[in-house]
Length: 247
Image 1: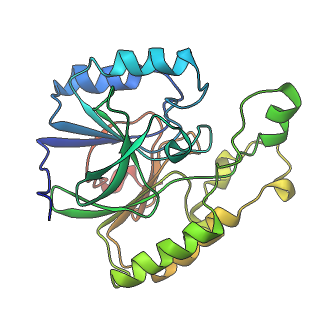
Image 2 (image 1 turned 120 degrees about the vertical axis):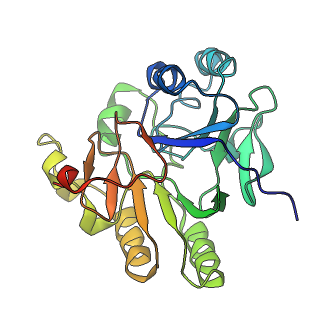
Image 3 (image 1 turned 60 degrees about the vertical axis):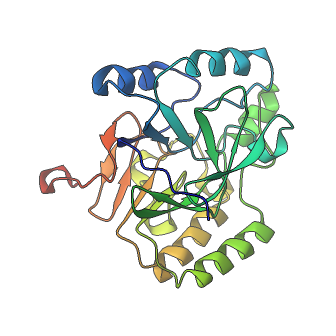
């Protein structure tokens, strides 16, 4: 069995959408090294344009003293669909990376990583509520944005094999009953939104024994004691919110 890597520190934040600023903030504030890990909860932006613009972004990040663990979002292509990515062993399970950019790691949906002794389940993917707006304008939209039914079945079996027990969940979207409806866009007819990912995650949440669930996607920083949504906040992982932060 491969040796499990131990990180000096682990940090966590939300969607960055192709901007390097929050990575630079993490590096600058915490004086990180490559042995520090920053978890980004989806919509990172490395695989958005699928051209030289993505390459330029990665070339900036590969120079930085930090390692990234990226959860798959809805506004980016899955690394398994890009020929330059390879599967690697990462913290006890499978992940993806490009050899040119060894500090940029993408989680495989359903992998359970051992991060400094904690079992962390990665569950990427979500539906783009602006799908039709994007298609009408010829903007990027990825048919692979959501987890397939086949992979969902595999993930359910993985969890069964782990007795439905992990320490933490790292996802892009969230279980159905944890959706931050106060942040829903008024311009979107919610009857047109595909919530099948959230419904499936709710089924997992109802059965899974876990300490805390972290997600991004909804562009807000919020916590209810069991679930934490990240956007611009950067926190040490595992993040334990103070009571006064609960809303």
